[in-house]
Length: 495
Image 1: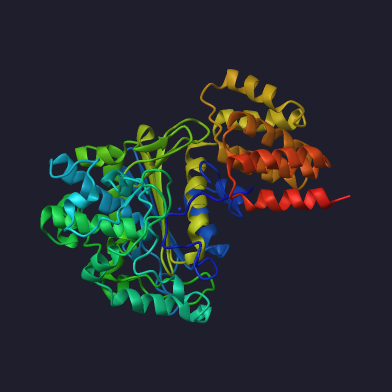
Image 2: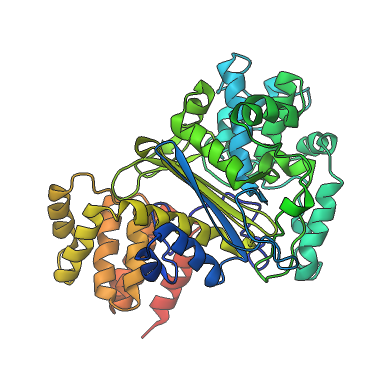
């Protein structure tokens, strides 16, 4: 089954029609080949991003070897036509979660809390619901997205289907404006955990809202004051929750191109409500690259999963691209804006992309990937593997991969990368796609999705019995895989 990486953003899956949390997969932008050969490849890529309609405006910061360069294109408002600039202030969405997690990291470094603390240690009595099957939510579960808490408090899913789509964002905005921390703590007593904590990563604004409350209770100070003390003042950043001069405030646009409400509500600030410029974010990413602050260094340590596949630290996703250079990333989205940042500590390199369109979430990461490729070149091992498989017409995928890895030991192939590769081939060469999916299923035999994808390719080659067998393997690993159930029924009825 073709999948997208978990989107760490404001319930973007539910608002896909109005505003848009793959590991290691690059989404190619139109014009990439043309832009990459220009005199200034980064500016050309940024210009193409706007020219091809990804967003009205974009600001990019590239941090490399201690120096920062800014690249801008388009406008911050279609009404004023004010040009994009690195000083314009954007909503950074779920990247805010890394700031909130950093506050907890400081509390842990100071001995005020422990990573394995039951969250109820820092709450008043009355939260016995924050346990399932005897396992309480720990601080570690909050920062690794495994808390099993619902996505949003207040739960505004009831709006879906009851108000016209064009009014949905306005109604959600109104609800959040009237919601305060006291309401949150009251509602928190009523939630039912979705799973046993610590088991499964899932997007939850509620978890980060709770982190903000816990930081305030641990330090006895407001969230904004803690940001100033631990992050903004040391790094020379503006106040992410403060007022913005009208001439610098970026106007956001929904995926339909309509001007979107601003996300300026204290209730959501710790989860997705901070606002910074590219200058501010460059300073933030630069501090993470150097990691001189022990609290910052702590946020980079994997607490769930492994970088070989996908790991999570303090909300940072850690992964390895095809050249095995570990990097950390996070993305964000609001009603009208998209953001993305990543950094490669060993390369002393990082990038920030801030765009004023909710539809630009995935393409913001694609722009960052394209910039990285323009500056460092494509991974040599991956390039060699692609060429070798093309020459052999995918006749022996395992043998070709083994031979290429012998030449390029750093070649790193993730499940998601190979799954996406297979789907790129499926429409034109089902046999080649089957070879890629078969290798992936052999490497990741406990993944229901690798077997589901392989079954699809087998079916495309005309092998009905083989496809049914593979779908059944997928279903055994994940009984909730409705796609496998439906495909088995369809194939069994086929002549």
